[in-house]
Every structure is written in C-alpha cells, then in structure tokens.
Image 1 (cartoon, rainbow, N blue to C red):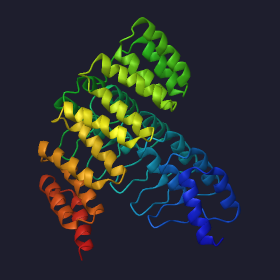
Image 2: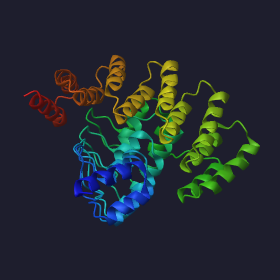
Image 3: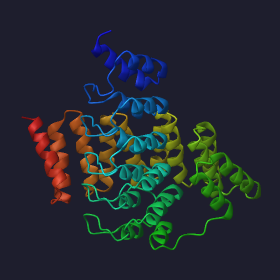
Image 4: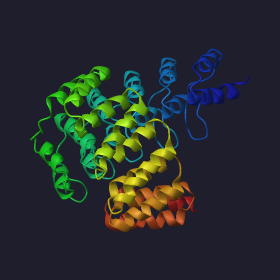
Length: 386
C-alpha cells in the first residue's frame, strides 16, 4: 500500500473508530500529520466523532492537537465546541495552546459556554483557558452564556462556574451592555442573582450530588439524587440533575426518560426540550434531536433560543440550506441581530451563494458598522466572486 493510501485510510479508520486498524496503519508508516482536502488530520477526524481511544493513540503517536483545518479549527477547540470533555482532557495533556482561537476569535471556552457544555466549561477553566477573552463578535464566554443561553438550570450552572472563575460581569459587549444588563433585559432573574454574587441556595441533596459530579463520581451523584426523589418524586431540579448525570455517563436512553418525565410533569416548561435535544445530539440521533427543537419552537414561535440552537446544530451537520431557513425566521423576530446575519452569511457562503452572503453580511455591518470581522467577511466573499 502506498503512503497516500495509508494516510487516507488512517483518517477513515480514525473517523470510524477502528482502533486495531489505526494501530496497523501506524505500524506500516501512516503519517499522523497528513491532511485531507478539508485540512483534517486523523486526530481531527477522531475528535469530530468522539473516538476517545483513537484520539489518545494518535496523540501518543505525535499528532499535533493545535494543527488547523481549512476553517481554522483545531482538534483542541473542536473537542471543546462539541462538548467532548474526555478528548479535551487528552488535548490539554498533549500540549494544547490554551490561548488559541477559532476563526471567530473565540477560545475553547466560548463555544462550550454558548452551547451548554458544562463539563467542558469546567475542564477549560481548570486548565487555565482565559476566562475573560473576547471574540471577534465582542463577546466573552460569560456574555455568550447569557445572550445565547436561556437562564435555565444548565446555563445557570455554567454562569456560576464562570463567575467563580473570575469572569467580569461588567465587561460590555459591542452594544455597550454587560452580562448583568443582558440578563436583566432577558428576564433571567436567577442568572442576575448569580452575577450579583448572590448565589442561590441549592437543596442539600443537589449540593452533595454536584460536589461528587465535579470529581466525575456520577454514579454516586445519581445515588444521592435517587434518595432525594424518594422524598419528592416530582421535583424538577432532582429530575434534571439525574438526567444530566446519566447523560455524562453516556446512558442516553435513561437520561432521555428523565427529561421526558419532567416534560410530562410540567408541559409548559420548555427548558427540558433543550435537554432532550442535547441528549439526542450526543447520542448521535440528529433527526430526533431536531424534532425536539421543533416542539419547543412550535410552543414558543417568537422565542429565539430554541430556533438558534437548532440552526447551530444544522450548521454542524452541514445542512446549510435548512440553517438559512432558520436564520431567516430568527431575523424576522430580531432583524437587528448582527450575529444572526453573520451566521446566515456563513451558511450562504458554504452553499456557494456569495451574492446572498454579501447581502446578509451587509445587514450585519448595518447593525454593527465598526466590527472588522464583518468587513473582512464581505471582502472574502467578493474575492470568491472574482
């Protein structure tokens, strides 16, 4: 087998989780530094599919955790952006550049805060990823968790972790508004208390369980919550944490049952649709996950949170036509959101629709005229048009 075949097969085997074949290919001389047409190394392919054992082997073989694909994404930041905290730990131990950023100027901490990956946020904080770094959209991790979160149980825990780590609650975004002001504006009253350092008093069972979970002792944490549920079977906090701990153990079916039981108890509480969708995403059931987002969007058509995260997931799946449809609906609700226009432009560019991408980015420029990111994006689209 020639070197090119060895290298391409290494990427394929890494993506598909074939550890024994990966080992064989490495022994035969396959290069861990080889990149495919998308600029992906075998480590990036393994990371994108959460192939933990293979990622570990490739790092041991000398794969660079900081090398970038054609979108300027590294395996290190990719692991954080997808909530793959086990691989993230391997990346950090393998020499990750903790200050490195993605093409939007965000460190590993920002996408994990935006998407609701609590454990990933905690790993980044513990490793020393800068907590107050601001990306090219003008947001810190804290601002992203407030602006793109919903103030529910999961995002409250993320925000509390960031505040304890020294996140600046008064740091302004490009509109001059701080995380505290954004939380007040969005009616996230529990978050406001956290940002004011007035941390809510958790139930004793929850406090014990969370302390165990912080040390990855999820089975023990579930035992604590099970005792709590014997006392109060319909307590949504207890049900949420049991579901979350089960999810971290990759017991997705049981986690999903927990979240669904919460919806049954309180059908008006849309928060749990985000948890069911996220659980299904991690379980690699995209169609079912999208259906959960749709349920929440149908129940709250003018609420942007669920539709935004649906569009985000569609972009991850490479389904940019559908993502554009969702961004159009979001812009119909909030036409001045420059971040919505920017994401729409990125999807249009991915589809090769450069004239429409320019039109979308011009809307972002109109609403945030001094941001060089948007002008750079427009320039690149013009160059692609020749």
